[in-house]
Image (tube, rainbow, N blue to C red; front, side, top):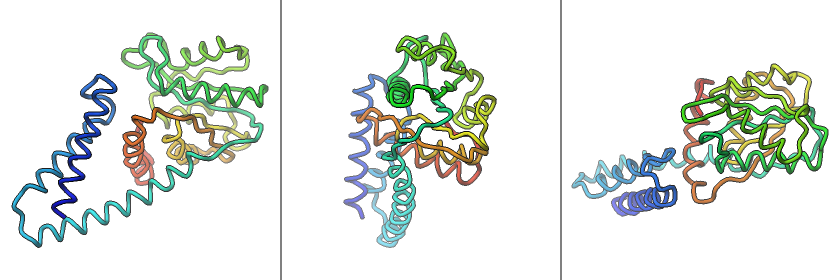
Length: 242
């Protein structure tokens, strides 16, 4: 158990350094989890604990891994689903905009929407996302402008520009899409698609389809672990977690 704690703690700290160097930020999204987790594991691995404490830790770790892997199985399985059907609407979920600049995760979502629209050019699009700190325009406005520049007609796009979370993205988009009758596709990054589908069902969507975009491979593990906590929170409370 001691070796597990030391090795796992070291790997967590190493991954934190990878994220920090790659993003050039010490506090990028969820990165502090790896720093804290690594530190706690190393402290426990170095501490002179009695044998019975390591036995207790072994069982706690085993239970945590079983729960984690069960949830991650659902998340990862959804990542590989493909929608080959013409829908009534697709909803592109918002992500951070820096000023008016489309960030990497959001661009991947929009490019995936464009791929889908190449196959089914008549499907209507809802771009969903409000304006947050550091954003010169709403996420919806930035997304609509991107799609228009890529050749999507403006009258094919509807803007939902008030939402501040995934739950609000889907709730407020009901202004345009009939959640009970319409076939609605959700476009978001692959790691986020399962949680989005759970929230969509909670918000009353009856005919939902998942259209996952890819994500930055360097951050993939970071995103997947963050999603574990997001999915569990949504299952337990149905509350807001973005």
